[in-house]
Image 1: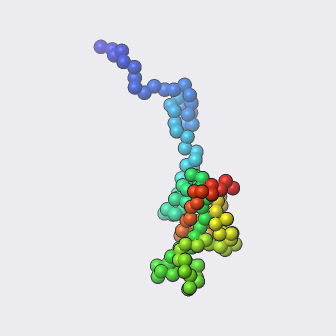
Image 2: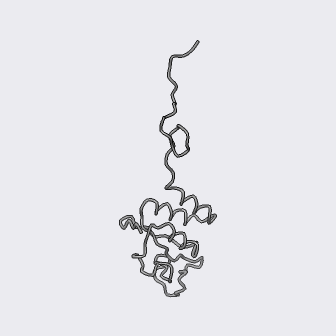
Length: 128
């Protein structure tokens, strides 16, 4: 016998990104993150950094600790192992002022130093 109940899920007249009648959440803000994850396989630091940037956080690359406990900056007397910006040309020469959420800049940084630590600054919200 036919039911008089309405179906639980109905198509909307509003077209989503998928071109159909169903609503689909906009995932365009995740495209750079997905691209970053696939362009450098296994680079969870880049993935995390892109996630921070997509939240509007300004980020910058930091030196990282080596297996022997020394800093990758090559200063044998470094007293801030893995916690200071990579201040080389093309990286973060202005320290914290170099922080950005520009995904192109971030990709370039982590292509050059895929093992770099990341510093995120929620308060800065750089939009450069």
